[in-house]
Amino acid sequence: MSISVLILTRNEEQDLPGCLQSVQWCDDVHLFDSYSTDRTLEIARLAGCQITQRKFDNWSAHQNWGLSNLAFKHPWVLYIDADERVSLELKEAALDAAKADVPQSAFRLRRRDFFSDGTWLKHAQVSPFYLRLFRPSKMRYERLVNPVSIVEGAIGEIGGYLDHYPFSKGVGFWLERHIKYAAFEAETIRENRRNSKPFSLWQALTAKDFTQRRFHQKEFFYRMPFRPLIKFFYMFILRRGFLDGRAGTTYCFLQSIYEYFIVLNQREMEHGR
Image (cartoon, rainbow, N blue to C red; front, side, top):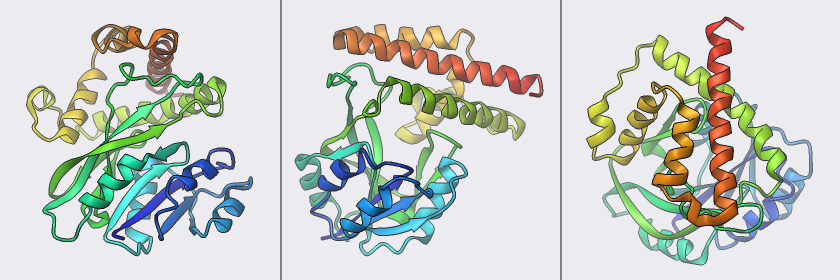
């Protein structure tokens, strides 16, 4: 065994049992909890998890604190959320890749998002690739929400799927959560511009490193007018979200609404509210 598992939680009594079942093969599961008030901790204790609690401030600060302070047993960490499941194929691929002598510092894996009716949103995803398997000393995060993964060293890619169920608590919960995310996104945009963080259109188009390219692409996108409409067009037409049927169409609309939440938060901040 060479992998520890890290799960971030806040009131996840509904999704946590299925998540823990998918990582039963791991002998070092860490639950990094933001003071849950439901049965999350009870479920984690019964499963033998290592539990650490910290008050949540923002995504990057919270994740960076966890990587720096949790006592992982193994040199590699697989980071997942409570509404995600590690497939058997991903487990085998991760265990095969995470060895002490490999040159990589992190591995990118593919995530499958599912709508509330069980439809795999195969096309209606902005990006299906995420850096979730890494050496904790070589990883850090930036941005207040939807953080960008910054890796020190080489990055590889592994097979298998991480299955994600973002609508497990219903569309209403998804909207409520993304209203909060939108405020973080707007604050991130404001901070980047206030600090004059460099943006490069050339890097957005040509950067070989996927994480860096995605960062610059996000910043380019935030400078465009009519972003909600552009996001819908990108997901529904360019990424062919319509091929995912009614679920894909609905998800594309929800993502454009989320983008409009961000725009509204930006406007309020510009008016000093």
